[in-house]
Length: 118
Length: 107
Image (cartoon, rainbow over all chains, first blue to last red; front, side, top):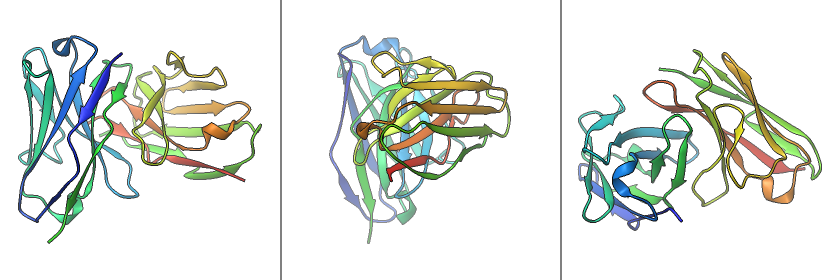
């Protein structure tokens, strides 16, 4: 059974960076890409970017370009999302989700709450 | 960017009701349109992909339809476990985008 487990909640100060991990199991990690999506309180889901787990190629939403870095470690079957220059508006739940091409994202990780507060 | 507008944003319904949620796209996403269900404190769960294909394990009371720029999610005979928020998503072009959500609450 495919399963994604994310790292725990964090509190960060404005201007800091945060790195969230997503550990995959139940499938060949390098066979599918991994997406990152965030959900701010009361807001819609927002796609941030993805990584091709076969070769490490990435694509980012222009909104986060320059602030987000998605990486991976095939030996750990894990993907990582780092967001820098944090501001209060970045307070959100961050999800990883396994790519299924044009047939959607499934499954999703359990989510990681990142709170940005001084 | 393809903007997705869901309507209604909120609906109140009773167990056994038939519910329809609409997702309108600013540009046609072809049929690369998915629907997700999200319950409070949980991650989204894929229900339908390619506009009308039911994800494995999803009850048949859920169905998707539509084409072009207008798509619908229908829930026949609403069950207590269906009270949740539903999102559409387009996977046709980057950035991938989601609708604003429709919260289905118990009347």
